[in-house]
Image 1 (cartoon, rainbow, N blue to C red):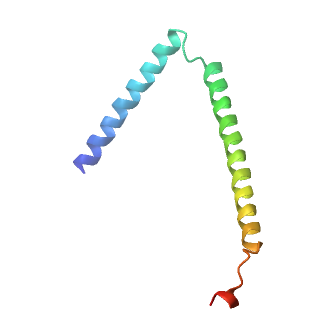
Image 2 (image 1 turned 180 degrees about the vertical axis):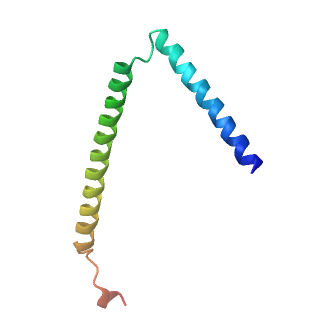
Length: 81
C-alpha cells in the first residue's frame, strides 16, 4: 500500500515537472502547437508511406514464392530414386 502511494506521488511530481518544462519551452518560442501538429502530421504520413511500401513488398515476395513453387525444377523424382 505504501509503495503504491509513493509511486503515485512520484508520478504526480514528474507530471508537474514535464508540464512546467513544456510551458518554459512554449514561452521561449519553441514547440508551438502549430509546430507540434505539423511534425506529428509528417510522422504519421511517413509511417503510412512506410506501411504501404512494406505491404507491397510483402505481397510481391509472397507472389514470387508461389510462382517459384509452381515452377518445374527439371528433375524427375521417378528417375532419381
